[in-house]
Image (cartoon, rainbow, N blue to C red):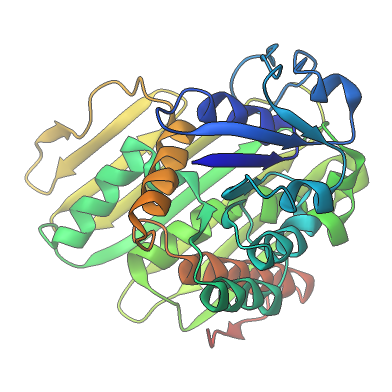
Length: 339
């Protein structure tokens, strides 16, 4: 399958390396407006995880500077969108209308109406659409999903998800909430998506926090209110521009035990109600991004829906995130959720 990659920033460079390693996939075209990046020199790129960028061989890759050129390439079968967030939905629509399958970096969009529009277009064009919600391919989170979905731990009583990092510096658009959604759409959309996948839509949401994008701070403590669960909380965000390290973690308490993980040094472990501690996965040596991209590739080739990461849930995560940001702006007002 021939792929066009739109955007060669932090996530785009990560996706490019993954595509180049997947058997049967051909990175046929790239699109960016930076000539250095188009040359394959991604050495100046640095994100919130992983090492510095690399130099990639784009000698056999067609290079475009506009969206229209890239999605109009007749040889391209699928488009991978890694553009600034406010361009996600428009680029996905353009690619779908050109008859391409679409892998779309998270968040799917900045509002629910736009997300629903992308899903509807994928249906009309009969093309595969998937949003790159990478948590669903990280072994620690996969282990949590499998445990809770199996029912062996019984009812969940509380759940806590946290994700934080320094404010990004790879583009001024990140500090414009109308273009990026700020740290909440950048980071917490992952955990909100996970809650939606594990527990379904909540009855209501509420949130508090602080937003100062110019100062590099965008934080939230959000609650998703479910009948029968004591609390489900997501928290974190951007903590200044600088060297603050990335981290993610969760603690989920059920009648049968507690599941906990922290990227800062606590491996995924089940602590059973009787006291026994059971490691859930071996040391994680994998490339999470490659795993999600390879899964999308397989879905396209097989003509099947991406059931591990359904677009409808990705759209639901956008809607929940918007409600949480709205609640924070209303000083913690509880907002009924009708997804």
